Length: 214
Image (cartoon, helix red, strand yellow):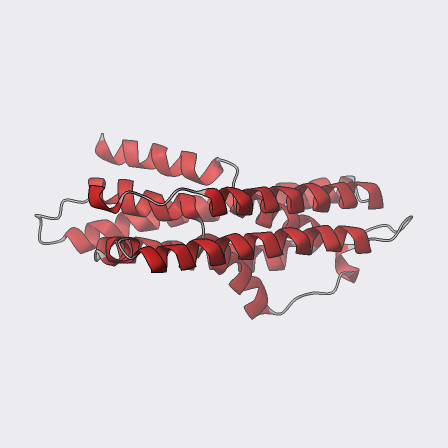
């Protein structure tokens, strides 16, 4: 029953719209499957780091540092804002009457694609608060094998992320082929960029937790 509750919470966390959603949505549409899969890999690696930091209690230590929390929050907001502007600029660069061909789009290198996915997830406040506030409740720290239990739970979350965003990538790629035109591409990039900017503002305005509660 506890495992089922954890799975449900992870599912809601993964499918609810957030920075990851619009990152993969735009990447799958504009750059294609390869770049999207690399960014998904970045999301998964960052998820394991979030989980391991929580499992060993490091996240709580970091959270109790006001200056460090502010620095991470501001950096995360600026990074999401940068991604939003980047997608909007890409939309502007799609010339009128130009049909978008994924094969003709300049590809980014593997490290860059991985890094964008990794940074978006590692700086995602929704994921951070999940692993600080909710995740420890599903770990039996009194048991000798609690580290293994924690890794299993993190893996369940990572598999959900992988499955959900791969399905999104496949669906978006097919949808892009059907509606492969300049107008659709521009709207897609503008919407995704605007949503990322919106999430950057939300992150910046996020109140600082009451550290005495931890």
